[in-house]
Image 1 (cartoon, rainbow, N blue to C red):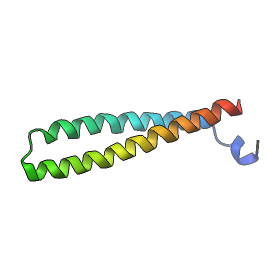
Image 2 (cartoon, helix red, strand yellow):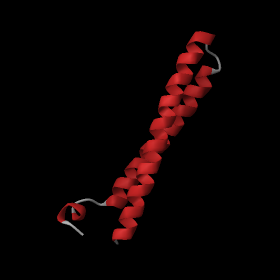
Image 3 (cartoon, rainbow, N blue to C red):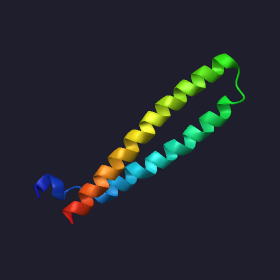
Length: 75
């Protein structure tokens, strides 16, 4: 393990990413729910925002899982 790796707690860092992923997932649900009552042009914008949030959610979830696995492997 290098000095840089010792300064990071990958498991904790992974948990932070997973926590952020859950916040994004909740917000994604809110955006989707709000889009159901929007006018057509607003609905398109809301769904575009939802797609961005979904991409961010997946990125945080996958990064969190990878960091946690790295932390477990280091222990």
